[in-house]
Length: 415
Image (cartoon, rainbow, N blue to C red):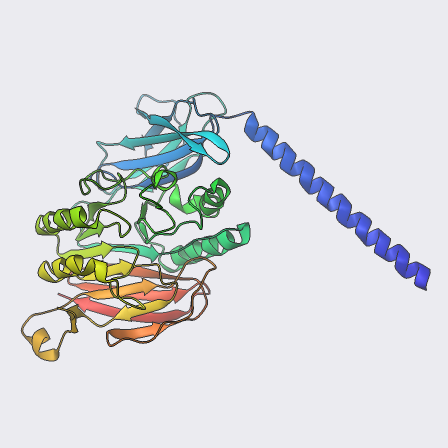
């Protein structure tokens, strides 16, 4: 009997070794296959840069730092890129030094599109066998007063398992809100911005989504360090309308239907951003104003360095501030001048600003901080979360869920 157990154990070990060897050979083969096409795109993501109804932007990496970048777009759902109707755009090609050596960075924008229309595209070097899979996107409808989008923050992973959680979270978000037109990510995409493997895992877990649905990034303290954010900003092609003196791609704004979204960088250049923020908020005629930042003005605690921004949120009637960093869930009451808006103020027409932190979308959580006077909701469930924000005419509805699909908070704002 003892000898039989030994034989069984040896057999199991042998099987495990065979499985591991097969997996290793498969991985080597995949790497070898990838090496045959150094100009093939990876980490492909779409963003807004210009008018959301008539343009779309894209970014991708290549192993070959000298590869050219080409974008091909066709109207409709056809994946044929052979006809005369194909729109061809030459990418802006640069290189970046990573922990795996030099890589090609390719950014392209296609414009002159029709609002509310579906398109199919592919990106690549232009050489045979070096194209991405065809993906589709839809431009924003003209003059719409409705939009739904997803809010997530702090995917901040290290291991493949961490980013698998992030992937589950975003996929669940789109199962819950299938009509969502874009994503706002409030920063800390990876634990270390220079970790190429982490970025690869970040994108590979959601490439079915972000290749067609714009992912709008906010700069977190793990994305920018010592006023350097090249590994972060190289992954996204966003509006270049931000504050002077800021790292390009870390402050910007865009419009989609009835909403004006302002993205700020809490990590550097706060004073110049304050000047820009005033002009940005004063210059929009959109009915709804939403700001996205990383470190929270009102989260599990307050960040006093943002007081000048908060004054402008009050002055220009910002409705909602999306935040990250705390890795817990918090939502404020409507606040004005640092106080909860009273019923008397509401009767007089004051709305105030609501500040939310949608926990984290990855696998890292912090202990719940002490409750503050401004907290309407504040908890730590130790589960990845996301929120869906829907604007329809005069009503904004915010709904927060965990990765398993349980709704944990909801509120409405009305103009």
